[in-house]
Length: 399
Image 1: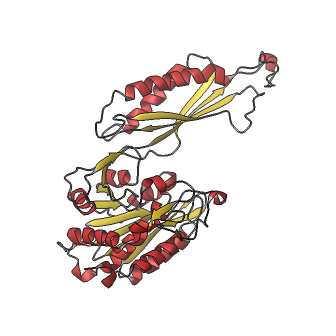
Image 2: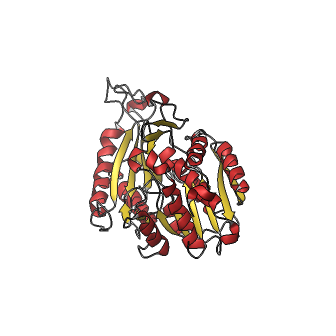
Image 3: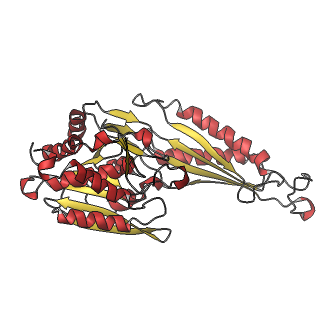
């Protein structure tokens, strides 16, 4: 069955994507307006829709679950509605207006991942409930860009039962991803608890005899401890990845809002990330960092150290290449499955019982930057038909 016979025309896909790009769902903005539009569209297409609202910093966010054919889906197509923040001044077009220039469509979130949401909606609209032998679902989440908060909330909702197979439509150029690393964001805070000489709290650098410099005293100890952990991580081999081990990066060192070159710092914060491999004990790794750093800083009296998560860790994803959903995505996309070092909501669904595969249109290299685009070739009916076939093969007993 051709996409344009029941699922609409290529132009309808463009127009649906245009509407989705038109919603400002960048970081800090509510996803309620887009969630309501998606819900109404899916209900008109024969889905039973449930919204799961929650709040982040007093801003309403919404996850949408649309099901067709029953209550226990065999397959879910999943994507996030939110986008990263953007600097409008760096765009050559309006980021919230889908704009064609030559063989590219520009717009914030078009690749990551509103084009996929439109494809999932069109593919789902094409298939009638009557032809389903097993139900399927659409999961549209919020806050993926700030720690997969929506997916975390969704899997713990009362009554929500995850599909055994979940396709996450992040842009992979339709190359199936069946393994990816996790993500740990950690902060290490140092604070000098001593008083200044003779009780003097002046921290002006003109007289460094009065107070201690926590950066000079504590930071070298922390960095040496982290470097030791980093070397140990490189001995944990997983040949599925390149590099084939968990990685660590110290990305931020700050002395706070009052930081200045002529102020002797009393506080210091280090921010780092670790990307664990599948089957690695994430909580055990956090405990190692906490213990080793605390022990190192204890060499200097009266420096308080705290090691915390900057946010909850995103788990790694591991699905066998022999899993039916991975094999089907490989067949339809014409590529063998791969492993990647970034992370997605697939790790959360994987941890909660699903066989996850990341498989979506557009190119990952175009995301998270000004002038994000997707090639016009991804808007062809062939792309939608791949997802129609995916649903039929999984939920209709074949084409």
